[in-house]
Amino acid sequence: MSGPQARPGVMRLSPYQQGQSAIEGISNPIKLSSNESSQGPSPLAIEAYQQAASQLNRYPDGSQSALREAIGETYDLNPQRIICGNGSDELIQLMARAYVGDGQEALLSENGFIMSNIHCTAQGADLVIAAERNYQVDVNAMLTLVSDKTRFCTIANPNNPTGTYIDGSELRRLHAGLPDNCLFLIDEAYAEYATAEDYDTGIALADEFDNVVVTRTFSKIYGLPFLRIGWAYCSVGIVDLVQRIRTPFNTNGAAMAAASAAVKDTAYIEEIRTHNASWRERISRTLTEIGIEVIPSQANFYLLRFAKDSNKSGGAAEAFLQSRGIIPRPASGADEFLRITIGVDHENEAVLHALSDYMDAP
Ligand SMILES: Cc1ncc(COP(=O)(O)O)c(C=O)c1O
Image 1 (tube, helix red, strand yellow):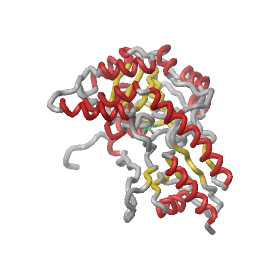
Image 2 (tube, helix red, strand yellow):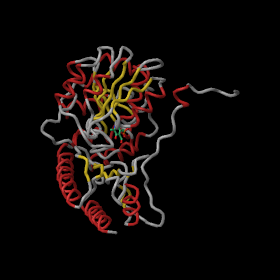
Image 3 (cartoon, rainbow, N blue to C red):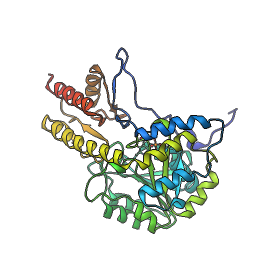
Image 4 (cartoon, helix red, strand yellow):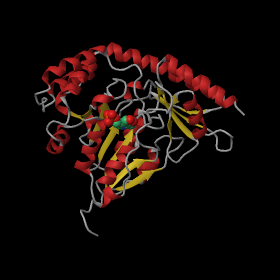
């Protein structure tokens, strides 16, 4: 074979498919395919972004200190244990690059966030995938698969695409069953939306144990996915290692300025969290009443399941919603499922209306 040869892990991958954002012939569709915030960011974040335009000729602050301090203040965390990335996705990639590779195993959950699989595969790691129960991480199943080659374990909590979560005690039990030399990454992209009483962030675990990393993002509740900015909280030892492989200016100046302002506007975030929780409950109740199974969600989206033996399906529901100008996210290779983001009032009303008509249709 001639030409450069990519590493075997890279050859095994296929490109990530982004959620659809347009419908032919429909202007201004309701885009509910990527778990974005329909409310958008805090006005303070927009203002900070605009002000950043006066500094486009300068490199950003490679130490990320203003943003780390702003996050530290809002979340009551030590800024020295925070590291920021070009989206939390980059941080997952950096952790995989630093901690797992050829001949080692990455322990993942069946319906876990797909980017973790991609980054670990690219590293050359063998993916060991635990089955789920009721679309939820099954800690027992994961723990039975731990081996002396397990170097990386990750779950998203709440998870995408299921929206489900495991409670604080299950999270601790999973961590307790992992060897010390295994990095445990808890992806909390949707943590700010979780309202269940027994939901617990992994931040206390990351404080206690030096093999735990929690990742967070400004792409979801903070409404800044366009800018690509996220953060991780972990031991200073892990921060130090990741500093060695991250590019010096991985987080851009405009993103850090906007995120620093966004994270301080806690009242704005609280409003969105309340809006989301109330719609999540209403949507779940209404759709269940009309015969659609709604997987219980703690995130800003819900996964619908259409019974296999019925004349309804995720694919047909998707086409029906699109005919009404609404873009949901189909599940690749599983026609019973459809994922829909929770939007603003009129968007959610439109979805409920359309799905009711879809279920009534012969
Ligand atoms: C569970 C989960 N983790 C991480 C991400 C990545 O987010 P970002 O890279 O925008 O921070 C997403 C994005 O959809 C997600 O759903």
